Every structure is written in C-alpha cells, then in structure tokens.
Image 1 (cartoon, protein in one colour):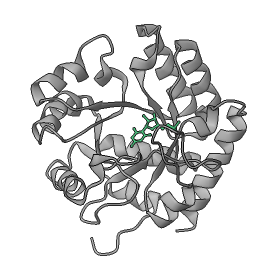
Image 2 (tube, helix red, strand yellow; image 1 turned 60 degrees about the vertical axis):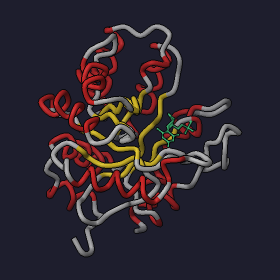
Image 3 (tube, helix red, strand yellow; image 1 turned 180 degrees about the horizontal axis):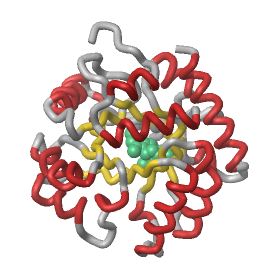
Image 4 (cartoon, rainbow, N blue to C red; image 1 turned 135 degrees about the horizontal axis):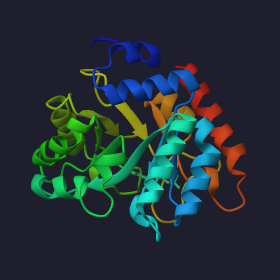
Length: 259
Ligand code: BMP
C-alpha cells in the first residue's frame, strides 16, 4: 500500500475483520473517533458514565477489574447501553502470559471478557503464542485484538524500535484477528490496521505518575492514529462530563478532517 487512504469510509469498504467494519461504521455514522477510558470503581458509576458519554463515542474502554462490585448484571446493562448509543466495548486487559493461560483468562474466570468485549489487547512479550491463544477464543466470537506496540508513559520499555517493529511483524502474520495497535502513531502502511492512542489531553501534559498527554491534533492529524482514548480529561475532578465529551469528540473529528 504505497499511499493509503486515511479516510474512515474508504477503510470501512476495505476492512476484512467484521468487528473492525462495525467500528468504522460507527465512527463514520456518529462522526466520532473518541473512545472514553472509563476508569471508575463502581458498577453504577460505570453505567452512568457510559450513558452520559455514549452519544459521543465510538468505543468505551473498560478496566473491568477496577470495579468493586462487578456482577453479570453489569455486563448485561453495559451491553444494553452499547446498543442504545451505538458504541463498541474494549476491555483493556493487557494480557501478557503464555497462550494456554491467556485462553483461560480471556474466556473464563469471573469476567468472561470474550463474551462481551468486542476488542481486547495484549503485550507480545511472551511471543506469538499469546496471539494464537487469544485468537482461538476470540475469533469464533467475532472479536478483535490490539497489540500494545507502544505505551504513553515516560520511560516505557515498549517504545524501543525493535520491540515496536516486532509487534508490527507479528500483527502482519495475524491479520484475520489482529485489528490494530495501541500506539501513538501509524506504524506501517503494509496493512490497514486501526490505531488507538491513550494519553490524550487538552488541558494538562501529565499526571505525576508517568502519564504523558498529547493533543488530538498531534495524535490524529500529525501522527495518523485513528482513535483518541481519553479518561480523566473527561471525568476528572470538577469536569462537566457531557461538555468535555462533546469537546473531545469535536477536537478529535476536526483533527481527522484536517489530515
Ligand atoms: P487517562 O486519560 O485518565 O490518563 O487514562 C488513560 C487510559 O489509557 C487508562 O485507562 C490507561 O490504563 C490506558 N493506557 C494508557 O494510559 N497508556 C498506555 O500506553 C496504554 C493504556 O491502555
């Protein structure tokens, strides 16, 4: 692919993984490349947040193990909200074990992530077997995987050229299940992967614990990523959640139109 189209509509027409088609269709229909990182501690807080930001997002990113009161009803209600507002769910599980173990962590346990999460992600530290293990569980259910090819934090060991390049090579060998990457920028034009970038903020540059924030303009226009993932910038202390979700959606979409 010499000079790929970065247009979401063109890519929807070309996408081969059904869940990627679903995601791109939502992005085009709702005109949003915003994902909210819903890092809250209770079931009710998660449902409230999902209902508030639902109209403005394409994807809700969860850390389901943060919840103190997780139950199966939460999954049912969250899935209903996803249908009501037309967004997908991405459980940011960051699997990192051998293929045989991640198969069980993904498909079983209390959370049964594969049952309800359209996307999940993994580190490729253990080698390609982790992708194969997750694929055995996720692909029959129509799920997609993202590889953490980079991280947003200061001193991240993932951000070395060799490690990031290995992610790309592994992804290229599994294009029927690997939907794309968590990364700050588009990494290859050899295949049309989806790129999602956390560490996005309009008002501050860090959080004192290593997080680094860049703007939607930097990430989407300049770095050619596809989706901005925003957490505390939207629901941090004193924030008006709906107003901030609207603001980030607008900033993300304008950054897309500008490229
Ligand atoms: P916030 O916008 O509040 O900093 O949240 C960022 C979210 O993205 C968190 O849920 C975090 O786990 C996730 N994340 C990240 O910040 N950097 C990465 O490199 C990968 C992540 O998944």
